[in-house]
Length: 287
Image 1 (cartoon, rainbow, N blue to C red):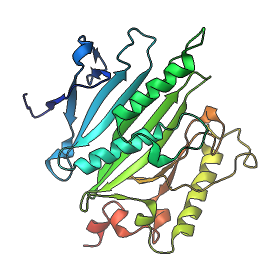
Image 2 (cartoon, rainbow, N blue to C red):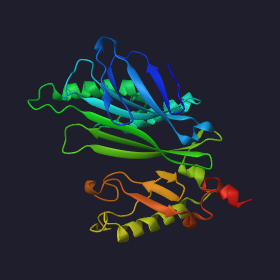
Image 3 (cartoon, rainbow, N blue to C red):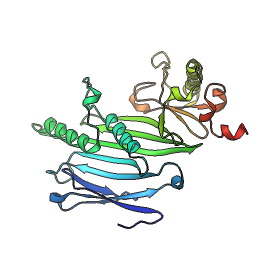
Image 4 (cartoon, rainbow, N blue to C red):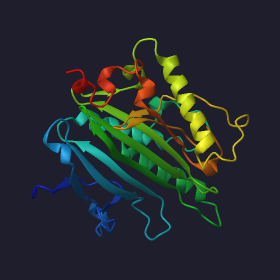
């Protein structure tokens, strides 16, 4: 294996599933030997890799081992690995998998869901096969799971986790969740961790003001009736460099057609609400 300043090539042990690897230009490299399936992964170092966590983004495409061609079920994954923190690597994968599960409205015990991408894919392919085994017009299932870095400041690494699950209906189901990591402690930070004690109502008031601006100014919300689509609070918040972003799921603030709205709260509206640790450059302003 060879290491360079921009790329690292990692070998993955043989899997029961057929894997293909996507390079950073989007071109797929297909594994021809299905009896000894393996993956070569292209990983791009981030500029922040010299300190703190070391994120490496990894692309994979999984298909059933007994299926060939364009009509196979598939799971496309872009996840992140931390060379210096395997536990965080596992947690990113666990969260992505849960965003892709369940694929029905039935109640599912979260502890019973797959914990790894490979286990998820195997179960996903089984469900696709069962759903299509007697169909004259089979529609194999498809899932996309992606982790991307959208912020890095004040020793906070902000990941955006996205999922899209297609099970043969008119459209798939998307999902977005933020994962905020404190590099100083290697802990995952929740909204409650970022707020000063007793400030949750003040945060929700600032969020409602952001919703009102969105309803008034956004082309997405122009035709929405607030009585049909009222405000609702959300904890899916990310402290970005310019503002606090809060993203909602489909059917929450509006119909499917508007997608997943993101409301933004200026940090000036959160003065005294957020702990200084989670306001960009707050440490510098205190000195």
